[in-house]
Image 1 (cartoon, rainbow, N blue to C red):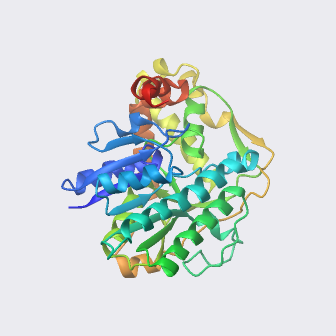
Image 2: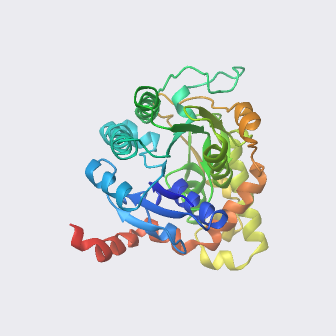
Image 3: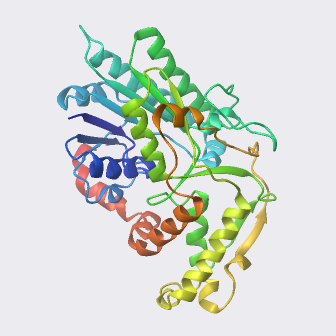
Length: 363
């Protein structure tokens, strides 16, 4: 039995990991540490037995207390500011959370786990392929040996956190692993990212804003496959090593958008109740969803292409994505259509009322 601390566990990937892990490892105890910023949502943990502690990972004494009182032996560190556009407009928050927050966790882990004779432990750091920069059309995919070349404040902050984790292993002997993943999608994703944003816009008849020519290429990874990859690292990954986790679906953004538009049209054609639920959608009015597509000025420093070479993860961990993009996207669309209360709650801020009611005494 393990006692696992999941930082950022009320966020998109963290919440999916909590549900994934509890379903497959019912004997383990999970504790979620999340400050419930705009992208953290306790509703995403509904049905979980994990304890939710509302706190900031930068509060090192609090983290130390959690590690001790709950006898934590494993940290899976998801907590991060992750939206590139937000990092361009407000980079300081990304340094605070992604760099100083990771430093705080490492400091607490070292203090608690390496004191005296030490104890068995694992610090797993979840990072991104964006730390490697941008690829040309014919460049080989990112691998664990690709040089770091971050191009946004977000990716620079994640690169810094990666280096801190590596340093705490080599300098202090902390047992760490790191995974760098490609673009995640799936249930519980905050609707600022492409797929949930465009889906919800399509349902409300709002524009689908496409950066530049829309030909930026990403490797799309269903979040459950990402969770499987992290599970493989925790069970079989070598201490001190980094593993790239990809989805095997390298697609231009415009292809993803066109797939979404066709899928929404098909869903409305197959289910007449959707027109009543979403009367402002073009598909409810006999028009094509792709009529909402519009081009906007590309964002500064927009990376052109990401791709993951996952041969190391396949060879050492036995990891391979289980879902094609077609399968994963169909399941994602079905989830958002079936879970309208969740994303409406995110958009109208109702979970803030939950926070104020349940944690008012904490200030």
